[in-house]
Length: 140
Image (cartoon, rainbow, N blue to C red; front, side, top):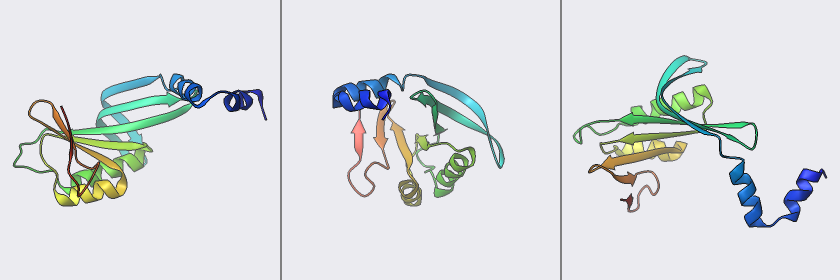
């Protein structure tokens, strides 16, 4: 066992969590960033990226759909985000919308770990895929 792993074993859970937290500080967010995948380039609305513990790069793709309430987000929109996520090797995808999501979009997102967030009334946010089929989590 190396000295570093001995240090982890000898500290308590809270100290270990704090040590990991310190390793997750390099967080960058970019707007309308071009990412290269095997299928070509994609312009992503928002990319959140951070380095974990000195080297592992974690990438979150965020797409934003500013639609009228009468134009719900369809499954194809979520499928497109999922395809981009896979093609560029990102770790998580989140789709923010001012409109509701069709049931097929909700089901696909839940099956593939895509976050769907509805922004309404100038700031109220509903996390649509958090509890599909249950009451929605609303946060002011």
